[in-house]
Image (cartoon, rainbow, N blue to C red; front, side, top):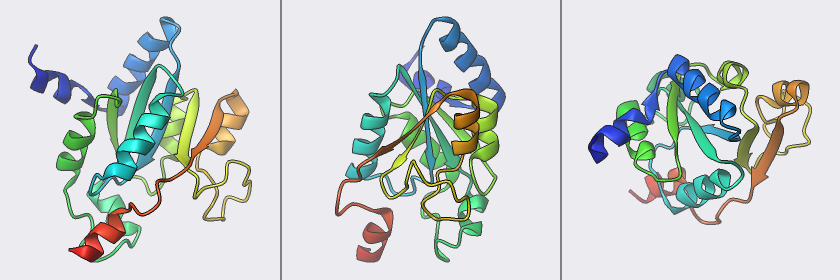
Length: 169
């Protein structure tokens, strides 16, 4: 198998992600999950993903479709990179084990289907927030609380954001 094959094998459907996670669980491995747009990958993203991967044996990244990003109102020119490009770049990062595309406005259904051991978000979210209408609420907290998974926040690297890079351009 070539390195390109390995990269492409990391980009999977929800059903394939569930199957692979089942194999990992049977082997006693823990899985962390995070999600986002990952539009222009930068040092902050790579640092965040590396720290998220250190929480478990495997890291699964849910990535928003182009249409779900547009529905979020991030701006008329977003996403800058299309979903296939964003998935490919994420899959090329060694600490990322799987990349799963989702079209919902939030990853709630994806988290419910995958049931990871950890849901990871940046520290701009609050792992103790219980008000689902709050911008600091971590989607999937209800699922993790119900089945015994953990919510973890990771400090963000100051000065790095896709918006700031887009504004520079």
